[in-house]
Image (cartoon, rainbow, N blue to C red; front, side):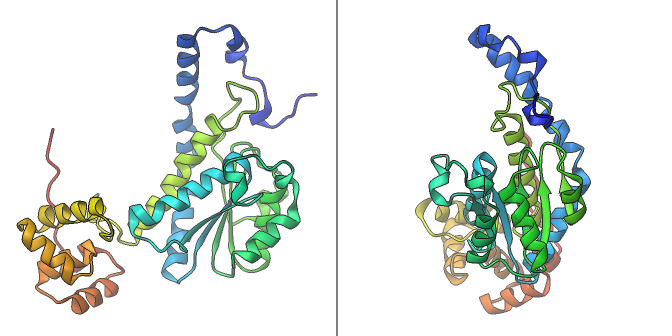
Length: 305
């Protein structure tokens, strides 16, 4: 009998993929991928609810943990790793936990996803505590490692979110705070959830962390201003951001950034309000980190192509 999970069902549109030409394979996969964004869009409200949970956790000094096995775990680790360079966030704020540990990032660790005890041990080792948010990622919705992680999260007072591309068991849905279920349907290659399910997962994770970071004031309009200039590329980007938002020459931008210890957002507030670094930091803290609540001024308009 075929597995009833959606991600394990055979896709009738790809039944003859083994005889397809390269161009036919491209067209087939592109057509299937076009359905993914629509599946994610059906989950707009639970994704928004998760953003709100994560923002509140961050503001209260708590963290976000992604937990998964295989492709799901790798995508969680990837999203977590991309937050510090994108948003200047502390690496502890968003963390990825994968069944089988770091070795599983590059090579499958057979059986790791079937060890509920491993999930509890891994979350304990990571210091997950009450007030944190744990997002369990399981394309099939049934991975034992993920289910155990979510149960452990609830037992210690953390918030639990399931992200799955097949309907999870009813008892799991009843136990979590939020369920995000972009049902992506059968894959081009049966059961290969690195395809549509993986793409949907990446889209959702992008939205959760970007949404929460934006809410924390990590952007000014859509400008990525909460970065810290720590290498040549970032120093150049930081200077250009200060030049563009404050209307100063590069030398002045460089001086502002030096006084702001390389923080773009702080440099902008210092320049706009004529404050020193400590006073600008205090104003930002009072406004929840959101520049526009401090200076009540829109960023420069977007130049039309």
